[in-house]
Image (cartoon, rainbow, N blue to C red):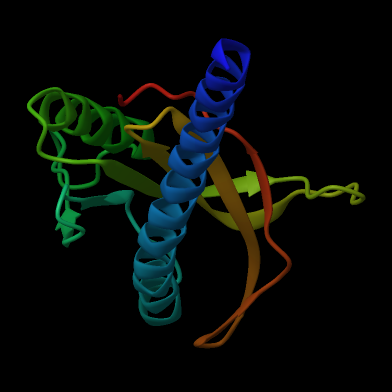
Length: 159
């Protein structure tokens, strides 16, 4: 009987871990799906966008987060760094359970040989989930076309 209790406890922990990762992934996908249209809109209206962020509060509410640099046209990396510091501070205070930093990059998609423009969404979750989802795109006039996204492990540097 004691052995059965140990097995059940181990199974319960495994189920809890899988549920936490699953919930983290679902939260990250919700956040990503909230942020992506904003990036697409800015691309269609302006052909570019400054890095921006979105965050999910513990109750599931999503908020937009912007950053301002030292100059009128700050380098993207400066804004990304400001967003990450802002998110780390808020995460440490328990204000967010998931964050998304959205920025424009040049990348070589899997199976390709040339760099293309892409929207990168760096997603981090309090439950130790971190991924960067990359959406290659092209712009024809004011029309933005997204291509098959791909992902890579994130830095996990917010939580």
